[in-house]
Amino acid sequence: MNFTKTLTLVSLFTSATLASTNIFAHEAGSWLIRGGVADVMPQESSDNVLNTGELEIDDNTQVAATLTYMFTDNIGFEVLAATPFTHEVKTDGLGKIAEVSHLPPSFMAQYYFGKANSDIRPYVGAGLNYTVFFDEKGYGALDGTKIELDNSLGLAAQAGVDVSINENWFANASIWYMDINTTVKTAVGNFDADIDPITVMLSAGYSF
Figure (cartoon, one colour):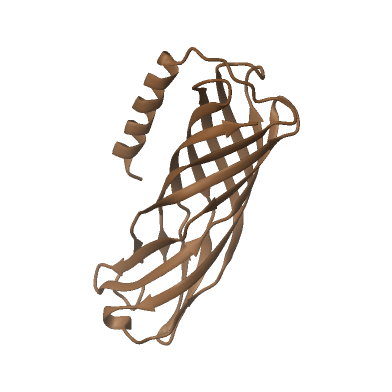
């Protein structure tokens, strides 16, 4: 995980929290829309690929958005969507061997701490992630080789905080963990991989 990014996130939102003086409402019946950027940081492990080491998957940042409906003042349901994430895949012995894109829609039940009119609303969530892989391309030793990754269904968890800007607008920071497991299928063999990314998201939000 890129701890510099995480520390920057914490610093920014600590400052925002201290500066915030506006009251907003996350109450029963409200819709919350958040939009910003999300950085996916795989915590990968895999089979040994052709005796050249485990798969190494780089980070990628994309535009992301969430939509939340508040069933009560403290309980919400959220859907995550994003533009496709694209990752380079390497091994120590072969270098870059593939690129793959994916979409990770997630569905979360959330609990918001504090009262509906609190200036700061930290929350936690748990649910399911369904990751769809596509546009798999081989490079280097796998150039021209057909590559396919199985889609993944797994658990997901999150923690975040909303900080009021005014009655309707707020700033948000959240961190996610997704259990993503797949089988990489190639002409030279199949390899199981756990991707299990940690995702950090910074966004602006609007409630109505």
